[in-house]
Image (cartoon, rainbow, N blue to C red; front, side, top):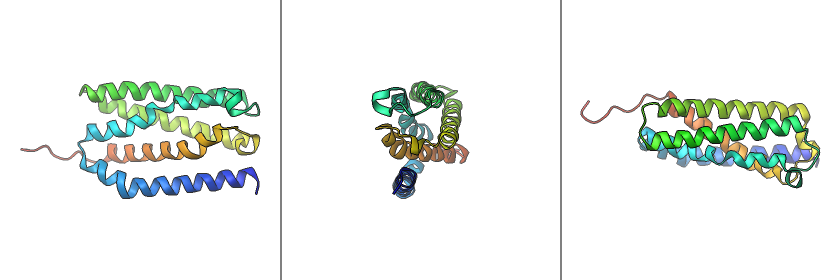
Length: 165
């Protein structure tokens, strides 16, 4: 089986497994929480995105990946991580603009994933050789897509009325 087929199968199964986990357990749990707590839980996933910078490390990702692709992935993940940490602090501090930061983090993070997807297809990275960065792409990236989908679903839901209203 060639690398592209293995890559596709691994991504498919990661999406299925994380999707089922989200649908059966995470989504019902998130809906039971107040919005700020739910957004905090989802934002923590994106705060860990500096792992994407490993694509710049030749001993991890190999030397076959184009440098412009690798830089775009690394810096997009870093920008999303910085926004996620700022968002976490704003949510924790109950700042009035915290929900706006949740939107910003998820828009920037999704744009980063779309950019990486387009670059990955353009350069056919599954066949180039990614070294151990392969695991980031086949395990973590599907989780990031699902976390963004859950965040957007919560953002687009009407907030529950407060007690006494």
